[in-house]
Image 1: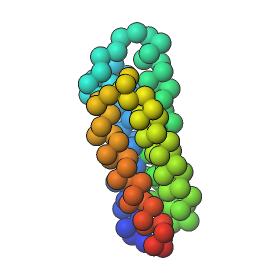
Image 2: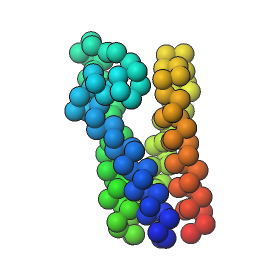
Image 3: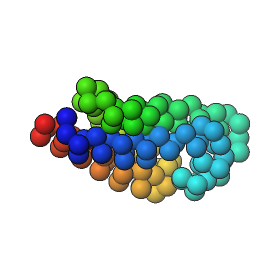
Image 4: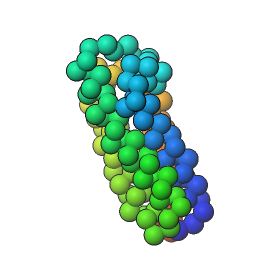
Length: 121
C-alpha cells in the first residue's frame, strides 16, 4: 500500500480512537464530544460499551498504518463500521439530532478517502 493510505489510517485512526475518552470518563466525554449531559448509570455504561469497539477500531487503524500487510483488511473493517455507524445515526436522528453532525462528516470523509485509496491501489 502507499504512504497516503498509511497517513490516512493514522489520522483517521487517531480521531476514531479518541472515543477512548468516553470509555475512561463517560460523563465528561459525552459532554465534550456531543454536548450531551448524561448522569444515569446505565446510560453511562451504554456509552462506554459503545465507545469501546469504536476506540478499538481506531487503535487497529493506527496499528495498521505501520504494518502494510494489514492496511487493506483494517481499512475495509473501518469503512464498514463507519458506514454502519452513520446509518445508525441517521436511523436515530430524532434522538441524536445535530449533536452527531460533525461525527457524520468526519466518518463520511474517512469512508470516501479510505475507499478511494483502496480502489486506486
